[in-house]
Length: 103
Image (cartoon, rainbow, N blue to C red; front, side, top):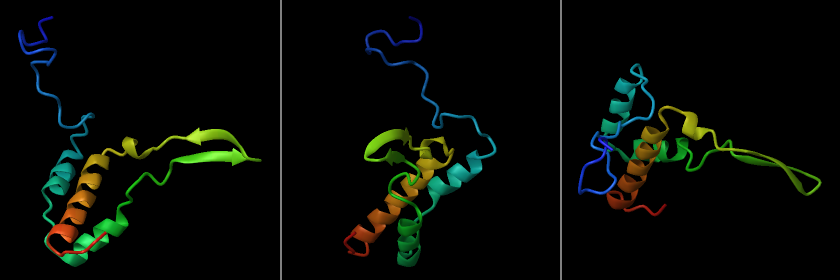
């Protein structure tokens, strides 16, 4: 019970780690991707097209009209997944808000 703040509900006293895995080698890349500013329409369009909006590996294996298996999305196993999704979102926001394009 010592992990919880009295009177604040069930919130732990320790702050959550920003990344679920401790890949200290990848932390500089994560910080670089998180801090990357989108200020060029060509770069924003390239990132929007290059980073998929949904996991391209998720599939249903269907044979003779029956679902045999489901391959789950494996993108969450990518240690830079959150940063890439955030970068794609910032690119879309730049294109819509600054450039006035409709996506």
